[in-house]
Image (cartoon, rainbow, N blue to C red; front, top):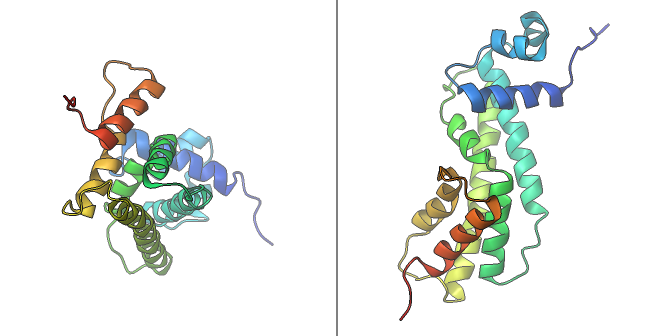
Length: 191
């Protein structure tokens, strides 16, 4: 007979996300997570052997959710319309930047569930970037992006915009609007 669970996967992953984003991978422990969730460490160990197994399961869950939401976007417009849609989407999922960094912090181990999750994460990561690559190629075909610019640099610029700190407390809509303008039109005035 299965033991009754004191938390759902969603509750566990929500707490995992808060702890990872707040404290980082190195400071993440089952003790801190259990305390945050007001459960015993043993109740987490019933389902996950160690923090890497839990974190990799969480990352699969989070990336899957991100890609499902991304795939629901209407990608039928021209490049600029799609770019702005994606920028809004990235800002609505601003934690994805930190989550992608955590993927690379998990040590490579021979644990089967963990290896399976790492393989799935790589697949999701590649799938996500392929979709963004397609958008960049569309911009080049429409001749709104210079052909000689590296796709990797363009993608990096788009993704890094969410990491720019808003130290001056500029309202979010104005902040995002300025980023869209700089990415699409540059920062120099045209005489």
